[in-house]
Length: 335
View 1 (tube, helix red, strand yellow):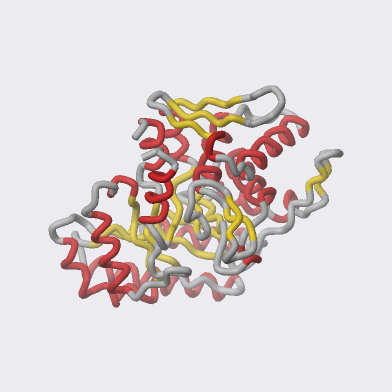
View 2 (tube, rainbow, N blue to C red):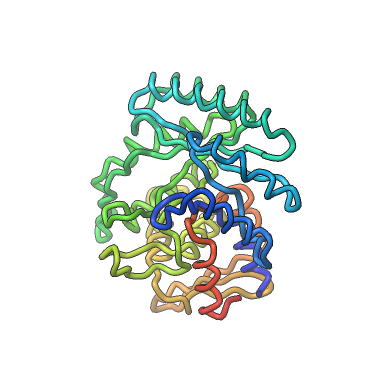
């Protein structure tokens, strides 16, 4: 394997076997996770993702990790449909997490919490109280929007008729000011409507990059390259596209005017929508994205740039399958 792909894939995949479409029972998901932790590709594997409501069901499986090391968990919060409910449930989640840490001290480590926002416009006071609670409990936290507005870019006029800048941008900016906070982006699901458009993905990745807030992704990223999936009757995003877009943004100069911002967005959209694996190259010194335009434009990113992006900007993504991404990378001849 080339060194740039190793930097790209290092700890990239959090294991989400409990969630659709796999939706494994807990015992099968834990067995699968343990098997992969013991395997030769364990360096690509991140934390085990579990809802806070299932924490206590883990008890009987904790001894399985005695010879492997600490069981690293990402906990999914209960959420809430309005500000007060959201705060109340986070408080209860913190109590459950604290109890579980005490119960399995030294054997289980919970450092990451992910939760859906109560709305696309939560109050600043609510978010401050929520993140104070999370920080007091020494948790990094990633916040997911309930839904994303359409991004109606007219490429001929550079005009955007969507509410993105009015609806999403201020909330991301607010969250970025809170300690330990990041954004979680849902990239798909089990129905066609759950898959964001290329433009929505590009807008969120660009927004987070320009504001300077870390991102995690979830759902839909089972395969490396964007492709049409007959089972969903839509296009699925590729994890090479999405995290490649993150590397791209972390190396793109900050736009100084709307025209430069639009050019960045256009290139991002093109990268995310790219369906040709041949346009991506991983070498020992870095990775290359071939734009595929009339000028044969290419963008090159060295290994340090990739590591910096993965460490600070694009953290990981949750997948219900760890084997599928590996099989696909092997089929492409990249592993």
